[in-house]
Length: 167
Image (tube, rainbow, N blue to C red; front, side, top):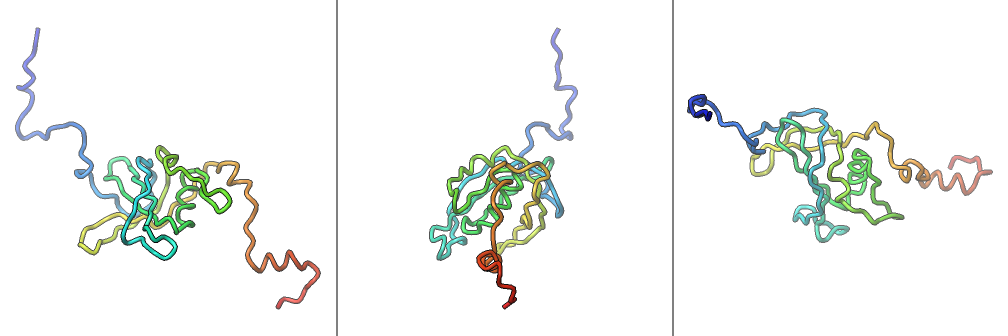
């Protein structure tokens, strides 16, 4: 026996189906956890500088359940911000001694971040990541066991251990 399902639907009901990202609400300010869906290198005009003449950026799309995904672009010469994103995702960040980095390894990782709402020059509201929160999960061994970085003062102190004059 076959049933006519059209009798159960009215024109007033919203059609259900796959949610379109643009229909989701914008992410409110605060701390959120989401999955990195896309991680790519892009060239952005606004990111050009003397150290980054092509304006290359690490761009990630982060999906937070029940909210519109956010896109965050970090200029590649902002190595501290790139490292913070990698540490939030528990991925080894690129370094001077290990510059090989595959941004694709970020896809599928979960990150926690603090966000705020901002207004673009065109007047559009968007979500801006203020800070990538370090993950509570353990870091990869290569990051965890890395030697501590020395400041110039620490290097001088290490080179002259018998010198106790502070200037």
